Amino acid sequence: MHPTALESRKSYRPARFLRSSLTLGASIAVSVFLSTARAQLPAPTPNRVYVSSEKDNRIQVFDTQGLRLSAIDVCKRPRHMQFSPDHRQIYVSCGDSNQMGRVDLASAKVTETMPLGDSPEIFDLSPDGKTAFVSIEDENVMAAYDLQSRAKLFEVKTGVEPEGILVMPDGKHAYVTSEGANVVHLIDVAQQKVVKNIRVGNRPRRLVLAANGKELWVSNELGASVSILSTEDQTVKHTLQFKLKGMRASDITPVGMALSPDGKTVWVTLGRANHVAEVDQASRQVRNTILVGKRAWGVAVHPDGKTVYVTNGLSDDMTLVDTDAGKAVRSVAAGRAPHSVLVQP
Image 1 (cartoon, one colour):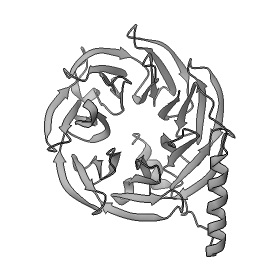
Image 2 (cartoon, rainbow, N blue to C red):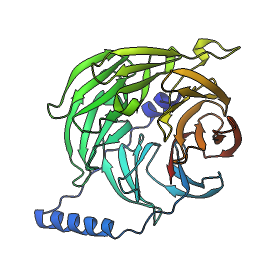
Image 3 (tube, helix red, strand yellow):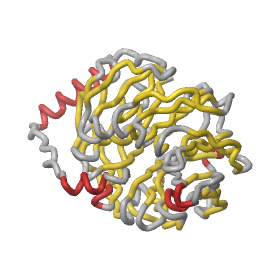
Image 4 (cartoon, rainbow, N blue to C red):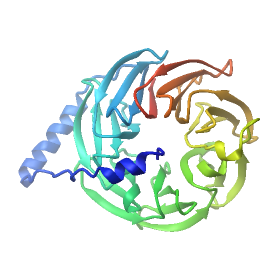
């Protein structure tokens, strides 16, 4: 959550989305139509980078070299994004309109919106792509939604301010961070309940799966660290502490993480420290720290592993990092308060 997000959320509470009442026959017809339409969507344009801009209510579109091409208007305060399984659409959670938008990449338009809870943050999709699991920040729950019917399936109570969500590849469990409780919840999806609370560092934010699914990395924003959990016995095996010369630990605020395509490197944005860290996954050692923009936040790696894209929330730009050279090559304007970044191979 950005530093000013709480104030803006308190001062603005849009009305909940009201769905139209449809007869059963009409609902079936709409579902068939949408399924058919999606099946006929053209292939997505390759070599595109998408950045959600919280204060512009847009997704900015770039080529992979950082040239801005266009922008897509979406719902209010777009945050986290994910591709659909076929990469023809983007799902985006919008914190101020309490919605999830579905963006058709061929037409560059929002084709559907789905009502969510109060201040949705991060989400993940089930392995079959049919269910979205969303952290609902102001309600302190993880909620599951059917993406076809747009109905809420169930919710699970979490600690204060849930954020990061990761659904395991088998779909049986989900991990959810609680910023206020300093824990990671292990949720049994079938039982629809928390089965274990795992204490980590101070203010855990995001999650990434590493070591062929055997490790869960958790960024601790106010702990200047990453907790590394075993997904086999659900215990913390290691805590990686970040240090930068001339900086206080309180200025190092890890948030975003991304795994390299070969699985050997975890890239970690260091927030107010204005750097991104290159971490060797096996040894858990920091190989390099690279200066980027102000308050490095979101991060994604190109599928060829040669470029890392970092969104910087206070300098309103995106930095491109050459992984072979180990340095930033350029920063480009990315709208106001860029949040998340996706790369279309």
